[in-house]
Image (cartoon, rainbow, N blue to C red; front, side, top):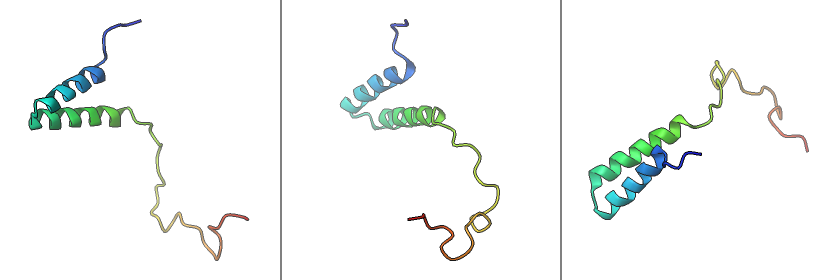
Length: 68
């Protein structure tokens, strides 16, 4: 097993240090970097509907209601 910290761990340590030093530029850059990494690892929800909202909407009275 790898005992070295991964990139996110090192960035979080650097973020804490920058926050303690009140380095606003570094804090902003590190937060942005962590956000980009988290977004890149997010689960792909797949392709959405190709048509617009109206084309995919239910038609008729009560068509979109849940059965009770």
